Image 1 (spheres, rainbow, N blue to C red):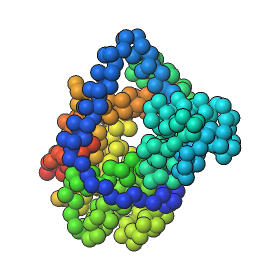
Image 2: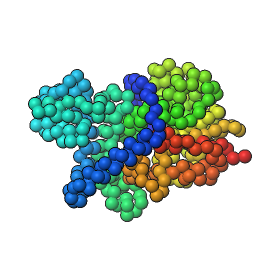
Image 3: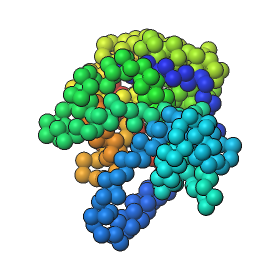
Image 4: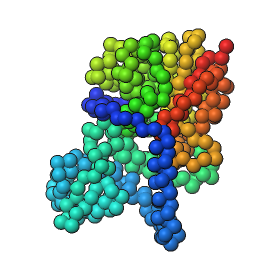
Length: 378
């Protein structure tokens, strides 16, 4: 099961629901961005453009450091000099000025002629209590354990084996068990991403107005909670590990949904009991190799009554297509997890078929998450 969600999600206020953009608008925007960046590279000598890309690693560490220091929180009430900020975040004024100036290159902050740093639209998500939990995610991405694994990518490309275990002596989820602060940041960041995508998932799939919805390995219940809020007649089941269920109960209670959700202790890798009309499995399969995915899917199929549906939600990464979001994420899965990978909707359908499940329909969100609906083969 996913790592325990100890990030206290009840402390974060769910964001106001925003209008879901059409999928084609998102595609056009991403393609235009990629095109313009490519044009900019063409006007530079190739070696200069390449060296600029090589130095982009600095952004990860700047974001992680700013999140750790709480810089965005202190810029929320107005622009400040680095000296003013340094007194608030207990840092060296000169070093902080230089770091913030570098961050201004990519728009994380803005520097004016008087030497004051201003918040931008990219600063806001870094605030410590922002619903997106971006600060938590940036601290996780910049953590020494993950960055150390990335530094050994060459060996992973030679062997195809996860760098994380090789560098840190254990797999990622075991690491989270022994380093709970990193586990909390990881889980909080994923929860924030789920909040951001919940409206798009609701727009893409026709969840019924009544019945029972079971989220398998659903973390703190953030997606389940958003769906139940939108469908007042639905009831929910959350299947998770014991530590996760403790936080899930607190979160669901904080948004007034505890009475509509049954918390069930379960494990992805053994059979569990949970009877529902629809089962959800969001961003779980990409953590595992094909054989492990089949074990997970077979356990869910065993729990499903006749006529029930399973909705698998993953990124849609086609074998021979570049995707601005999922292609880089696929290398993250290769580096940090053992057998993890992004898959296409067709690859997910094959896993389902090998696990006793039959694909019925495929839908996409505006941001290219694929929702593959399946039923138990008769």
